[in-house]
Length: 66
Image 1 (cartoon, rainbow, N blue to C red):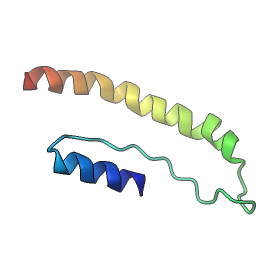
Image 2 (cartoon, one colour):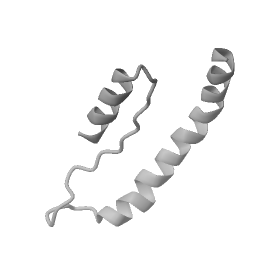
Image 3 (cartoon, one colour):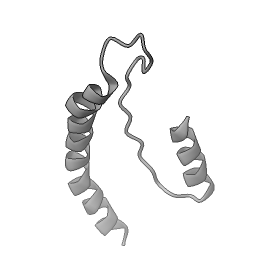
């Protein structure tokens, strides 16, 4: 839902955007994985890896747009 709000504002102001999401199926008492452990072990490293790969490409694109 938060991603949709970001997309709407960026669309309204004609700004590019990228949303990276990690999905955990349940965050309640029935979850089979501890949410904080999930963040530490899965979400954080994968998100960091994605950003590290994207940054050089985004910098190239930004330089081309100037």
